[in-house]
Length: 257
Ligand code: DAK
Image (cartoon, rainbow, N blue to C red; front, side, top):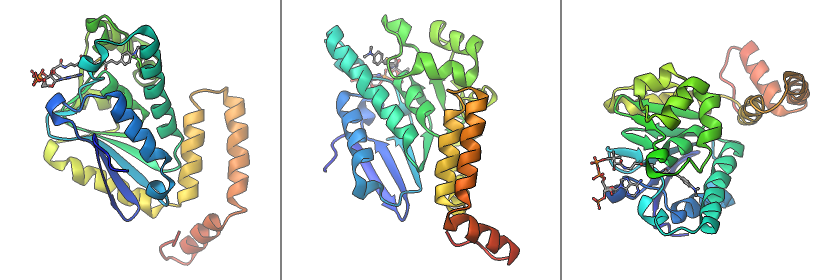
């Protein structure tokens, strides 16, 4: 498919998805979500993928939110459809077996903060600015912000961000658990490359299972999570990956997954 709002590049098993609407600070229209969904559904494009970097074109913004101009004429029924589309994308992204990394520089507002939160890693530049300013527009977040933000940063900070316009810069985002890494803008790609190098060294199925279980831990009682973990742990011993990983360690060589 020829994408109109995205640039997709792939090098071996790492892809980069760039939202390419710099004139509107990479604002999220329905078309952006439809194209991102199409990418995730495209088995040829995602075959063998180990990491997906999501970023925005230009240095000023990761994503400055949902496209405000496009939302102006939405009816409630269309708004429901739009919110569902964005939410479905975030859930589909979370369910992927590969690791997703939000590469955030500049504004990550509204829907931008919500897309970042759906990624497994949020790597921020010092120039990043995270916020959920929807109430200033007479709206509420529609792509998971009222649900994921408190799980990430705790309810008091989420309340400030959602209701009182509090924004977090890159350093503050790390302090409050919204991002895991912050670096000067010039070092953003190197920091991501370092994370990806470690991901590529590890076993793909083990990463996919770890991701699935860690994400599920936020939604289920500890006892259910521990039970699921024990089953998945046992299943590791039926696969090639653990044989190779353990053998390689004992033979003092690099594992080949
Ligand atoms: N949508 C559309 N265009 C945007 C935009 C956005 N979110 N953000 C910026 N732009 C456009 C600007 O209109 C401007 O266009 P031109 O005037 O050049 O044509 C261009 O990008 C550059 O922006 P500025 O000139 O404003 O640049 P500044 O450096 O002065 O300011 C800014 C940057 C990020 C502080 C400012 O642009 C700004 O405040 N932008 C809006 C940020 C915002 O409020 N984001 C949250 C959007 S609301 C729902 C579904 C979804 C949502 C809610 C409900 N349902 C379906 C129920 C989600 C809502 C949101 O995400």
